[in-house]
Image 1 (cartoon, rainbow, N blue to C red):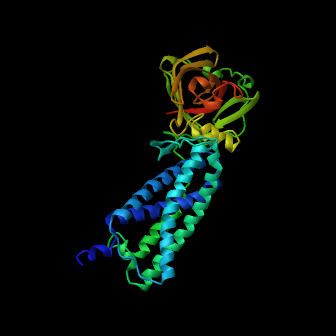
Image 2 (image 1 turned 180 degrees about the vertical axis):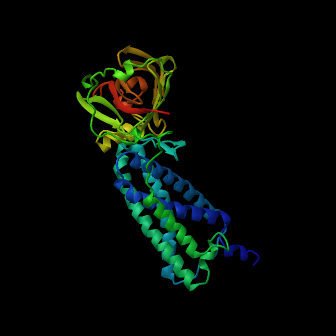
Image 3 (image 1 turned 60 degrees about the horizontal axis):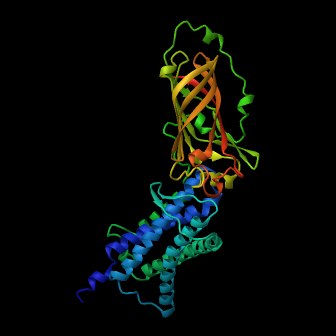
Length: 411
């Protein structure tokens, strides 16, 4: 008799885990329904990574909730008709099957896919793949989809049954509410808010550290090769400049393009990056103090082929989950003729740092400047292309990077 009051409510651990899982499941289901409908590129990649992170968190919390259920005492089951009690028990058992089996199937799915993307829990903690063969992939995909629909139906039954008991028996749900200040309406509002948040979230991904107008304009069309770019000549205002000018900061303008060209089986493959940023301090009269730093968001890669873009983001190529950005820093800029320069520096890509020379043509007209240039690098020296892609057949080692930009002198 002394234990009876304690059994009128669930334990604090059970309550916390129950509502944490409820909110996460509502968010996860809403996000899962729209994954395939998101635009290819950064948005879909960001949502996919978050979906994996939330799925693993649901798996861990579900295992913890099951352990608490087995160890901690809980209220006596509500007496009802035998068929209703049997249905309630079946729903609870199947909920655990779906909450644990769904994430496990998803884990198998990402561990056996042709495109392998390193799972980083909420962009921070690396999560390993399961050591399974490709034959597990298709069954896991089917099971993952079936369990998602099953989970949605079970949640609907669970909520309906709980509300039925609550209306028939005063304050039935109070056994699982966090405290006296909580109500059924507040709990349902929280679940609806979690689901709505996932359906309206833009999943635009992280912006560059200092976004500029040029970095917000992806270029779906390939850029002309550097050989087609005419070398500009100095404007009259440049040649007539009477006094040397100190290096100053320049701000990028809209319309910038950053592209690359690789070769697959001898066929050119053109691509671009939709998000990139450049910190430029420059003067033709003060090259010693001039500097250039370019930061590229690798997840914004676009080759006009969604499957190929996902492959480039994967661990086999850019590994954007662990190395989201490429950074070029020019340490020395030298003049090579009228309006022609070479920026010698280092490129950090895929966790590797290598020297790189960037040739560019520049035209300055008062406070306005335009530039275009290119560089050539070997992808394998940066570890871009592992496993079956770590050879030059069918993907060539050499990759040409090209850019165009306009800038305005900062005042």
